[in-house]
Image 1 (cartoon, rainbow, N blue to C red):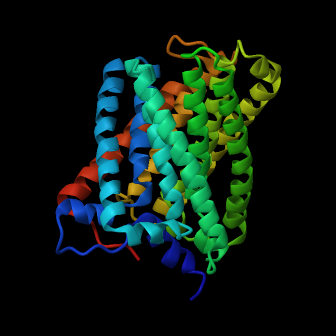
Image 2: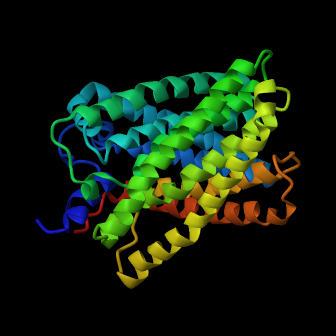
Image 3: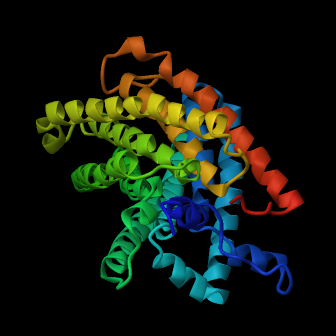
Length: 374
C-alpha cells in the first residue's frame, strides 16, 4: 500500500459508519448499528448556534433550537442505548479504533452545551445541573477508558492513519465541563469548589491541546496529505481554542468574588487572549485548505455526519468572542469593543452552515446513504 493509506484507511474510518446490512432488523436497529460515535456533534452544533442566536438577540430562534436539540439529544441517546445493548461488538471495536474512538467524546459537550442552553435560555438551572453531572461523569469515564485502551492495544496504526482533527474533541469535552461549571458557580453559595473544578479543567484542557495539536501539525507538514485526509473534524483545530477562550472568559466573569480566581486574573486574561488568537489564526488556514480540497482537487462536497463537527467551531467562535468582549447586553471579560463585528458575522456563518448540514441530514434520511467515495 502506498501513502494512499491516509485516504484508504483514515477517511472511511472517521467519515462513515461501519457496514450495515440493508436487510433484517428494524429501521431503528439498523440506524443504531451504523451510528457514528461522533454523532453527538449534531447536539453540539445545534446548541452552540442556539446560544449564538441568543447572544445576538434572536430569542425565538434560540428557544426553537433548544427544543429541537432536546429531540436530537434524546434520539441519539436512544440509538446509543440500542447500540450498546444489541451491537456491543461494534461499540467495543469503535473504542479500540484510533479514528472512531475519539468520536465518543462528543457526548460530553453535547450534554454540557445543552445544559448551557437550558440555564441561559430557559432558566432551567436544575436541568443544567443534571446535565453537568452527567457530562462530568461521562468525561471521566471516556477520558480514561479511551486513552488507556489506545495506549495498551498491541497493534497500532501509523501516525498518518490514526491521527485526525477529531482527537481534539477530547479538549472540547474538557472545556465544556469547565464552561458549565463556571456558569453554575453563580447559582450556588460556596462556589469556590466549583470554580476550582472549572479552573483545573480549563488548564488541563489547554495542556491537552498543546500535546495533540503538536502531533496534528506534524501530520500536516511532514506526511503526504490528500484531499480525502482533510476531513471535517480538522475544523476542531480552531473550535478547541474557541471553547478554551469561552471557558477562560467565563471564569473571569464568574470568579470576580473568588480569591483564587482574582489572584490569577492577569494569567487567565493573557491565556484567554492567547487562545482566541490561536483560534483566529486557524480560520484562514482551514478556509484555504477547504478551497484546495473542494475547488482545486475537486473532492465532492456531500453530507457527512462529521460536518456537524465543522459547524460547531463556527458557532463557538461567535459565542466565545461575544463572551470575551461583551455582547447581547452582557458584560465582557475584556474591553475590546473594536471586535464587536465578529460575533454577529460568525453567527450568520454558523447558522448558514448549520442549515446546509441539516438539509444534508434530511436528504440522507429520505434518500438513503450514498455509496462511499473512493
